[in-house]
Image 1: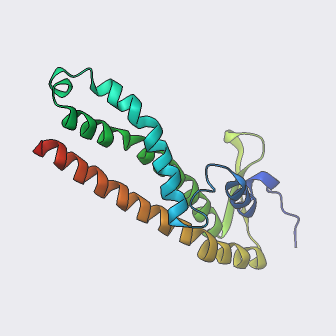
Image 2: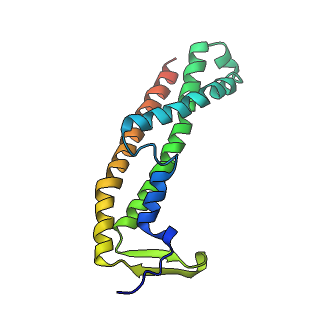
Image 3: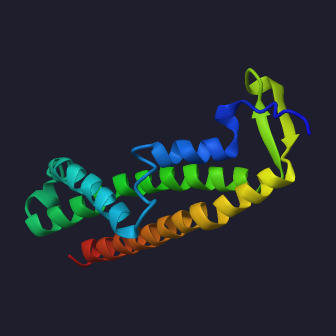
Length: 161
């Protein structure tokens, strides 16, 4: 068997470990509740700023309920962006784990190479993808669904007011 030419930091299992150790990407690892709490914290941080920006609208200034509702819906954009970034990171690692070949760069973007994973690497990567990463992607999908429902509900309330 040949020695693996893929740099350590570009190996799929190593990329998975880096995401697990990352403060940001660790949010959805254990539960949906932890993810929702972190995203809710981002929403709460952005809400006062959104309210201040919304006061720039003369019609909203004269209707405090509509002002707060519009600001609350607008503040959902930060959790949406954070959730999208998490989805992109975890789905990238998922794709790298399930592939039979590892695409890597030796020194830069211009010299990409492919290396076929040995059978034992493939089996281990598939197990991690199926039992570790897939549940995370399911949680992210649930959170995204919840966020989209909140956005639709909030915007329909804004229209009704």
